[in-house]
Image (tube, rainbow, N blue to C red; front, side):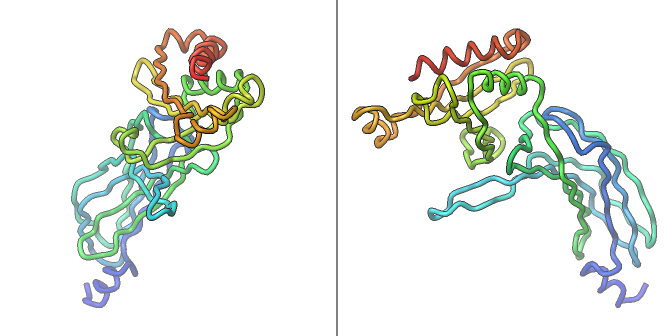
Length: 257
């Protein structure tokens, strides 16, 4: 093994390569991620400290009156401990992991991806990136259908920096809706945040009232035109269907107009 080959491998030339193939690119929060990681040895022997998978997404954070995009690791999984990878060796590692319940949904501009990495001492770590399509769970679909029944249109889905609301994550995913019929003229928008809790789901509703009259204008100026309301939905509520959930959400909103 020549010194020249070692030097090239340390900067990624002729080094190990990694590629991940997912069994399916479409998953749900709280579901399962499975697939196979393929490792191809390079031109020289290399010591691999570990192989890992991370689930990543972007979120928006304000810095110095500017909105910047930052990356968050939603989950991290260890595939292997350290081992020595011989030149030209081909390895396969199958995996199955449970996904977190608060995995962001990939609607509008929100994106989620899997990154596979090899930690190699004194070398450029090879990595591979695969995009995930994260679809709502059945409970989330029921809530989204209920909001649609009430005449709200989904305008935007964003991951916003909010460590106090995000639990173990530095951000929270917000679904922003605008009213199109019954609440039109009463609300500017409705923002919804989902908090799955095993056998139930909590919604955080941000009800943004439209300024009406002088009092409404002053409320808007003072930032008192918004109400934050938590709504807890158990399985027995969700199992009744979207129309029943819509009735409950409508009652909550009406109390805060």
